[in-house]
Length: 325
Image (tube, rainbow, N blue to C red; front, side):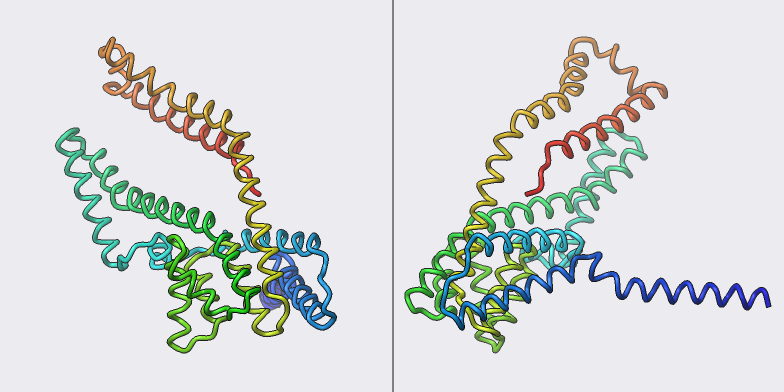
């Protein structure tokens, strides 16, 4: 009886936790707020379309800014697959090509370390770094650089769409103009949207796939605005105009933050590089004095502990000078 009562209590607790997760998750993750804001935006579009009057642009910009923040927090939680990260970096590699290249990089680095050092432990560590660390870092660097270039060019492309819509051109023709004349990577992304429509996809479906290729809140909100305009109507040029203004304001704020944090970044760089500079100078002046750190067990432990503490300090300084907009 005691075992049955305990099992019943455990099953009841699991069921209660599952029900709580199902009903509370939308509010904890922000999905409920995002849906509410999307519904509000759809309602305001209908009201603007029905009454013909222009809504307050300040309130619309505020709603767009809050939606961008929520979309950015949600996009950080989603982990892209390896194929998506390769595509987002602008590379035409396949998954097998990337894995073969990673294995070759680890093998080459292991051979070099084995010839130079001769220590098997260092060789294994170098092979691990060359196989998993270096290719992932290069892929992340290329991906961030391409996304940054896209964010810089995206507001100008939205302005082209706005001017085309106000001139009476269809939205698809505006997309074709961007696909033919914009800078990379905006040009290639909009070209894929146009090509998706030629194979039978609707404009909303094409922009949803555009978000998968470019996982940033700016692209997500652009897709939301286009989808709402396609389904419920409304003034698309006004919504895109507010989005363009918000994106330009975010860009200006990022520039101000970079200017204000330049001194702190320079100080962090000097503090982080000072031990290596001093160590290199001592090695050239008195090699026997500093080689004790690499030839004795106590010295190796000291170097390892110092590197760990330096890494912690660098991460703390990076967190202090990293600002979210």
